[in-house]
Length: 279
Image (cartoon, rainbow, N blue to C red; front, side, top):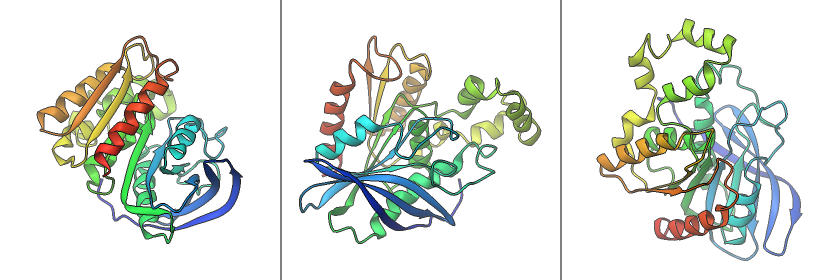
């Protein structure tokens, strides 16, 4: 992904709610020429607090509402002293539309998470420690994290990926894209299918650029995940290790894609990881 980053103009649009631990705001920021909506939780107190940009998994944009997808994580992280910026991505909620995003394999979402970090750093938010900004993504948001870490190293301090999609785009297309007949035909006409143009698919896959990764990575994945295959995370873990990177894959035996039984344990481990990697 070759593009100039341009994240700026973070605005707290309105306060949505307040708890004893944090205040919740509707926000917007600029990702290039697009305005992106989202929510932000800001812990009570003077700070400065580290921040996390959150990237949600796939939810049909037609039914998606702002801040949806990582509600548990938003609350837990804010209560543990992290500013949380949950981006809606382009084409979602109150964000501007990008009609070419799907045929470009949602690469625009990668720009939206990275530009969220830049918008945070360029803001005058007094509670923010802008030297400590990490990323947490789930499912599709985890796959977006892979793309960001290879295309834009040094933007985030660290990455936490929950049940991520594959770092090999062919896996994702084979799992979800082929069953959408119109989309599959458009992909075939534009790029060629993986079996017809393997060079193209290798060229857009983060897996083949893991030598560029500069930040620590934590991956959580359940062994019974029937949406995103655990072998995808095992392959990413092995390749990152082969490149000498700081990566930890934690497998949760008997856990599913949504993380219910072991979610609290996984978040406790996440906080420990963040404390180590966002000093």
